Image (cartoon, rainbow over all chains, first blue to last red):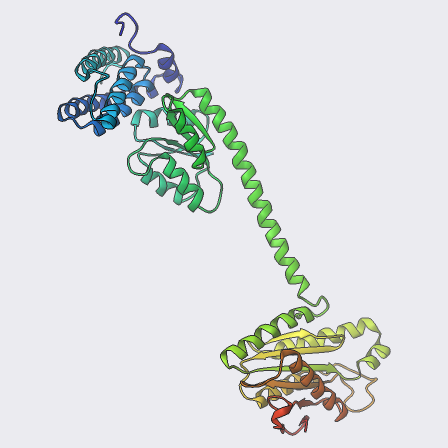
Length: 126
Length: 333
């Protein structure tokens, strides 16, 4: 994952900004919800991975993928998709010979932080 | 339009809600399939935008329920799904969805779906309206086809249907029923004297006299030109039919509709009547019941008119004659 690109897709942010009359109320509301959802999701992912609960892991990763895409956090959405796929494979065949879960989680954590920082700059927490 | 958004992800709900509201539609949100189902069941929703994956009742299940269980207005369904599972789309459409959106949803994609939704729901509204109108028109036509236009009483066709039903029921349950046929006395002379328009008026007046006396559960029909028939389900004993018929005869007499051309006293419109009564165990068919009453009517005519005559109880085989009250009723031997 390149660290030079913007963690938030500008086009999606513009779309969110266009949803009200430019005051950014809709954007702020969605960012607020996303903060709650994503922090909770990160905690869940960590726990589910530790406990080896791949059914829950695939659900959490799926939800976080959709929510991140809504905010234009496309790289984070992609890592979530990989996590979801990984969890499904383990569910299906009982082993994960295709992906290294720890490496995936490391990438997730790094991207997660970048997204949160970008969101902080976009909509300061009030 | 009133749009329901069902999604377990709050950011998706907010995003869709903002888009839909901005397009000028009313918006309701549900956090999962079960609460979406409750909103849908309470009515008033035009479009459902539902997520594919939800805990409990998921998108496809919601589609199936909606298509199988909710009556009333058509609800346009758009499924939202991730791009990574294109096979979901086919399953969703098969489950009853009208269209789909891929996540993250695009403003213009939502707008185009809603344009289609508006057109389709409008068509369904028109269809439902037209169908309701047709059903109403059909009922009116049916009613008309069973009603005598001049008197407003049931016509011969309705009488045939009702008689068959009452007869079958009496046989099955061991009940009684009575048939009374009335004929206006010297009606041809009335028409010749007063003209056909007045004749129609007299028919209407006599019909009203009959209808006024007919009790709940009984039905009056125009049986022929100047003939009327009253069907009395569960009439009890045979003499009850004669008594009821005689009450109708007296009511017509007391209406005192002038009939100057009547060759004998009284110079008012009168009716003669013949009755037959079906008793449990009788072998008479519905048609034979009519013939019996008709024969009794003939007897009443030959006995001097303005009177009621009764067919032998239970049919000719029983040989039971019915003697009836004084002033104008007689039993056929």
